[in-house]
Amino acid sequence: MPAATTAMQAWLGSRADVRERRGLLRSTEPQAGLVDLASNDYLGLSADPRVIEAATRALIEHGAGARGSRVVCGTTAAHQELEAQLRLLTGQEAALVFSSGYTANIGILTALGGPGTLMIHDAHVHASLLDGIRLSRSPSVEVAHHDVAAIAAALAGRTKPRAVVVLESIYSVLGDAADLAAVAALCASFDALLLVDEAHGIGVAGQGRGAVHAAGLAGAPHVAVTATLSKALGSQGGAVLGSAQLRDHLVNTARTFIFDTALAPAAAAAAARAAAIIRQEPELAGQVLANAAALAARCGVPAAAGAVQSIPVESAGQAAAVASALRSQGVSVGCFRPPSVPDGVSRIRLTARANISAAELEWAAATVARAVAFGPDGGPS
Ligand SMILES: Cc1ncc(COP(=O)(O)O)c(C=O)c1O
Picture 1 (spheres, helix red, strand yellow):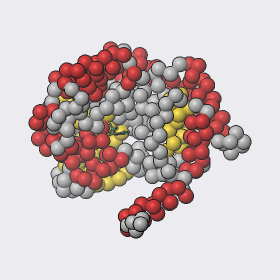
Picture 2 (cartoon, protein in one colour; picture 1 turned 45 degrees about the vertical axis):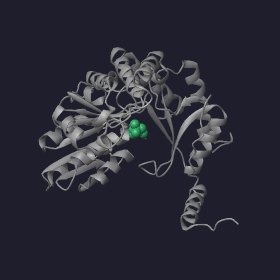
Picture 3 (cartoon, helix red, strand yellow; picture 1 turned 90 degrees about the horizontal axis):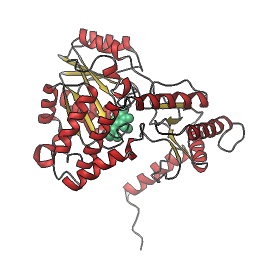
Picture 4 (spheres, protein in one colour; picture 1 turned 180 degrees about the vertical axis):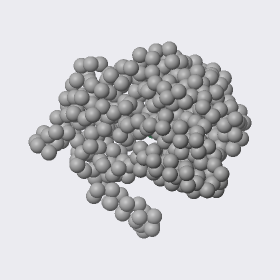
């Protein structure tokens, strides 16, 4: 006899129905064999033979897993080399590697937050930053996207002894850039810390060294950076970059650092090699930006600041239909719909890569432009 439906099963079913009706179903199907305009492998380093070779050597030397937290037995020479390479790439005094960008963001925000720290964040910041702010139990203020005056007002009116302003250097959905110089100057004058998530900046902006470095802010005592190793660096993991004092504080207090198994050594070695390549070959960052501009021009949208280009569409249903039609024509694109879009606008998100060929880019961009202009069925949309 089949078991009766539990309250949880009934609720899960009703949630799935709502998502299906709104055209918001997500899928975890592999997407092999397509022209990739969806991944974050901006420089193509995930498949670079030098990166793979470094990972293979670390796998043989250290084994498949890190076997413990960084503060127990999980730190290997691969983690130390990665932190050294990240310091060299970004020009920061210290680096601390986490198991992902998500845990790096939660780790630093909870370690800096609490009732005495006001958190001020741009409305478009990534889910991991929002989660970190919530978990920090700090009072927080959300300001409109790019609203520097609102940041100034929040800093001027603060009653807490400390404040952190949270931005992304290049935003993950729209691909637009923050005015780091203006916000850093405000933070300096109001004695606040600027925390910049460079997930989409490192490897792309500032000849690969990131937008914080390009703005002359690397090493500034009032600026800290978080990064993922899973985008331009082609690997897995995350990091906080800043002062040695900040690193020391995080090693001793960041819960997602202390109570989490260290990043797998092979991923650390891969990211270390990728960081060295980005530093030694700044032309890679130039190439991804040139390809991003070409992609935007062919698709009729203004070029964004980084590798991500965003094409707004009418509805979540249209975004899903266009992405699915493109998949069947051999192109993989990002399909961003509420609640993953900070402005509520559904969009097709294209990511450029340094290693896409000119012919592939032309064909894929033309295919995308047609699907967006004429609808997924080829008729006028
Ligand atoms: C802006 C931003 N921050 C953080 C993350 C999380 O990084 P990770 O995938 O390494 O957890 C992402 C990834 O999607 C991101 O786009």
